[in-house]
Image 1 (tube, rainbow, N blue to C red):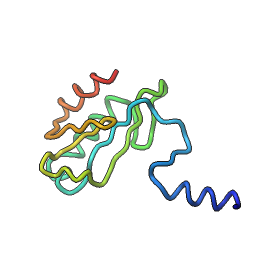
Image 2: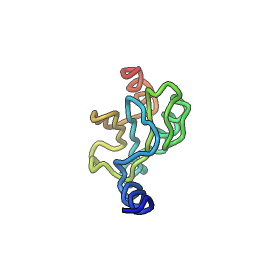
Image 3: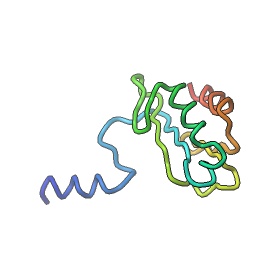
Image 4: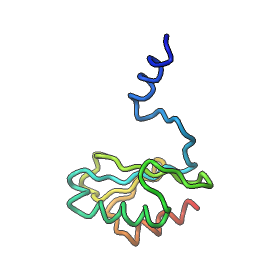
Length: 103
């Protein structure tokens, strides 16, 4: 297989990364329900708190930040997921408080 074929496959899947990820992955949902209920404000707070843009990782490799289209937890919107822990009905203040649990 050529190098370009391997890269093509690896870059297709969201689970493969080409850079080191943080110990904790923080995902903010911006699907329709989460967006309508303030998902963008949650993302803004997390970006400010971590000093990151989506796709980035903190210098100490504690956190990586991602924005996702939908978690399928619309009844809990807006949703924040840290690692495998789902946090619903988020507010900017609750998002900041949630992240302190992982520091």
